[in-house]
Image (cartoon, rainbow over all chains, first blue to last red; front, side, top):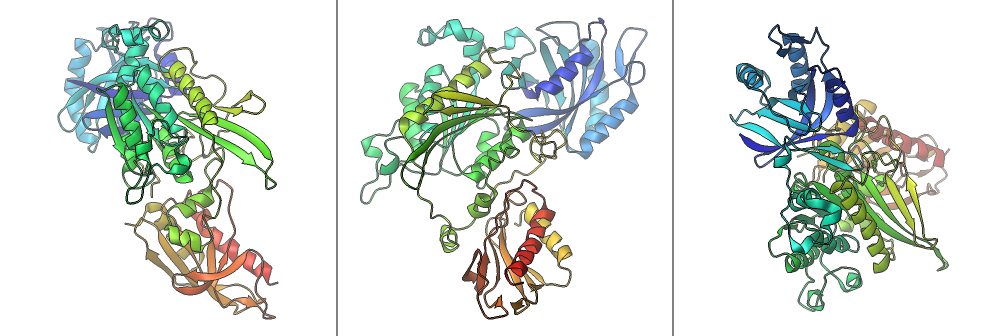
Length: 462
Length: 129
């Protein structure tokens, strides 16, 4: 059995499951999860979109031998609902364990009796089961390829991200490495181990994105996906971290790709790092696919189309994401109006860029047109925004601190009460904002057709 | 291949303008240019009937439909240009007038995108009462 299922929860759904299963009555309880899914190689991600509790005595009956069983009608209705929506049916129940849990022999025998039939009814979708301890979970997922899959990791994706395994011995604890000697007292071996295994996506390797790279490598991140279509130019040399004079364009030679500069920087610090450097626009074609197996994404590209696609990925695939940007506002008379930076946490169901009017719909209309046509329609006449490296560094630092505290430690709560931080560089103040949540949002609302649906819904790419 | 969102907008346009020919010239990215023939721009304009067109982005229904274009020969009945946020140009190899009306709300449905054509026609009528 391969251990390569990632089970992803929103805090709300995970809390509902916990309340139902671990209600303090020393009883075994059950239900079903309906999950969107995403496959990358032989790994399966399950996004838990909906929990259906089983009613004791009706949907879930305990036999005289003391074994609980979900009733056929409950299974049938939940399976039909899942299949109709292109989702994966996962039956769940609890054991009384704490940080380590597994299926009993009775559980496994019942899977072997029942799941071949369920699989035949699931129209090509996987089916399976999950068993929950208080702080642990295990899965047994059956696929049409005849492969059974176990849990690699479960995550509760709130502002802070909680990592859950079937057993502490399967947690990615890092053996002592002197390189990280001074940060280990803070991160501990489990936090360092999480970083070691994490794959980070960075979309946009310009002024802010390039500032994220070196601290992430030095933290201990080994796996990177870098996406940017652009090459370095003289006008951005002052802000692209890692750029060298030989990268600049000369007569007869284009500048080095920004992803190439970042890749070189990563490998200069850690020769063993895995880097996928993609010269491309995340909003176009299949470029976004490289992000689908990332554990965390930094969005540092400032186009409306990149925001649209990445926002959709975060809510569809439950990918935690941080969007970063800076802005220097100068009035027509040349006077400085404002300098500010933003660090926006996007999580499944919260911090949505669409709900908050942060995706310019007219710019989207523009994005797919050829440049010549945009100019003909008098687009593209805006002068470039002012930008200064020092402001970019502060925004990048804030985003990285949030990442370390939220992803690799438990310092950040699942709900910290705000989604966005706005840094005012002139006053030196920070405003924390709870982002708007539109109940009818096509991306982040629990009822949205895209929410947690993974590959079942096409992403809005160009 | 035409993106689903674009197909949906075309379907709504055909419903919204049942007496007009709705033609679509696909681009190479799932979107393309649409032209709705024989639409009414009101008695304040000459000619009172023209065409309306726009580029349909592959990111519909999330993208705006912007800008839209009407026949390049449309003017006020007194012979003066329409004025307002309009300018002469070409669209789909036709002489055209560009009508720049942005939509900032977040109602991102194929129906709302199709209704943008109706709203712009109303706006043109208001330019030539």
